[in-house]
Image (tube, rainbow, N blue to C red; front, top):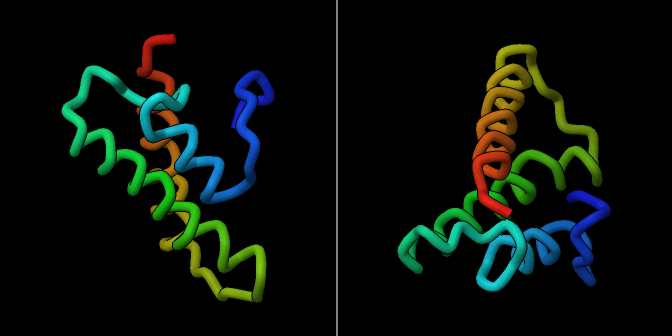
Length: 84
């Protein structure tokens, strides 16, 4: 999360606050259900890919790591495409 976005939470809660209206990462051009889906996508990515690695040793092979990097890159492109 950018230090420019004041969100009073961490991790999944911060992403939910940021990606659900009126959060700063909400794409208000999307229908409401798609906004909820985008929020779930970001929160799910944290829950599946970041949290386990933070709390225990999770073996990851090179192919899985590369795919997660590509997925994260796509999520970041989605954020970059939002209008301020």
